[in-house]
Amino acid sequence: MASSFFSIPKVYFGENAIATLRRLNHKKVGIVTDDFMASTGKTRYLINEMPLASVSIFSDVKPDPSIEILQAGAAQFKRFKPDVIIALGGGSSLDAAKGIKVTLEEYFSEHAIELIAIPTTSGSGSEVTAYAIISDPQNGRKYPLVADELVPDCAILDPHLVSSVPRHVAVDTGMDVLTHAIEALVSTGANDFSDALAEKAIALAWQHLPVIFADEKNIQARAHMHNASCMAGMAFNSAGLGLVHGLAHAIGGMLHIPHGKINAMLLPLIIEDNAEHSPYACERYLRCAAIMGIQAPTHRETVRALVNSLCDINRHFGIPATLAELGTDLATLESLRQPLIAAALADGCTASNPYSPTASDVDRLLTRIAG
Image 1 (cartoon, rainbow, N blue to C red):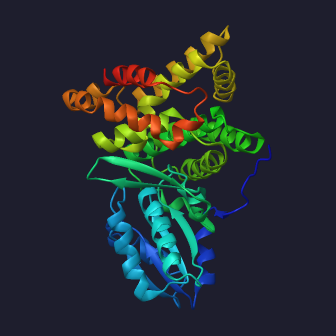
Image 2 (image 1 turned 180 degrees about the vertical axis):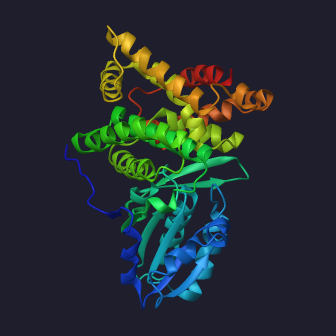
Image 3 (image 1 turned 180 degrees about the horizontal axis):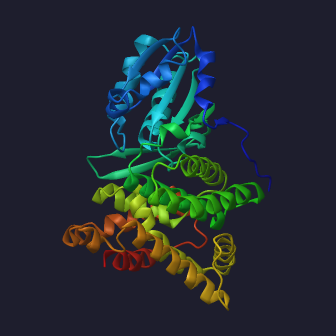
């Protein structure tokens, strides 16, 4: 069976990457972002590079953007008819911009809109993926949308835009990067191209995330993590993800837990679970352990050492091991147990897990993560 690997978007990176926006002078540019980015001058940072552009800013993006936010952004830009949309912010702003762009192109069927993604956190990888996570707050659900039309045309990785991200946010989003890379490496859709990117992302994240935790002003470590986030995004865009994300989308959506944090909490448990069910997964985790410099006398002990190392780094970063430790109301969790199981099994990310989990498998994992 033939496979494919995308060659877009074009990625600009490094300390002067933002200068590529100068080509947008004299164009109509819509910026999609949140109120914090607009109020702290980050939008001005972009506009200064394209002083002759006509700019409209939609700054109403909220965490876990909903259909209503997409509709509001599209309504604003219908009057403006942008040539380009720039997504500025974390995963929520990037996902919202993707949805707004696709909505506008349905309305302006003859007017193609360029999408430029400028992430300000090193986590989602959304700047290079065909994924967007859209929320349904009324039902407490997060839905991963997947379509080639959602891949940005251009990504700009400017380390100065992530240098002020607080330590706890950098850690949560950084563990999301590591989870993306490990799940892509172990996914049933893994291939030579995705492996190369996933392996490098694992190496960079494992080396540089602890440096950021110790010194959040280290611009070199920030740049390496920003690049790792992009590489991991490319890897999982090609290979797919797995049960960590399938379960994280369900738990995070219904119990309102930050995505990177719940990923980090689930990752050791699901590595252990996948390794028990799948020889393929076990072999892949051994490759992951080797990249991270983790060795033990036997294969089984090496996977156990990998799990223990992830638990140790979570503890070092202050990430709880269980939902009870996080302070989650376990009675609420119990009341949502069946919907959580159903949502995790139905999630598109779960489809490329190295084994196909049953309801009882997910139920058992929920009991373990509950604590």
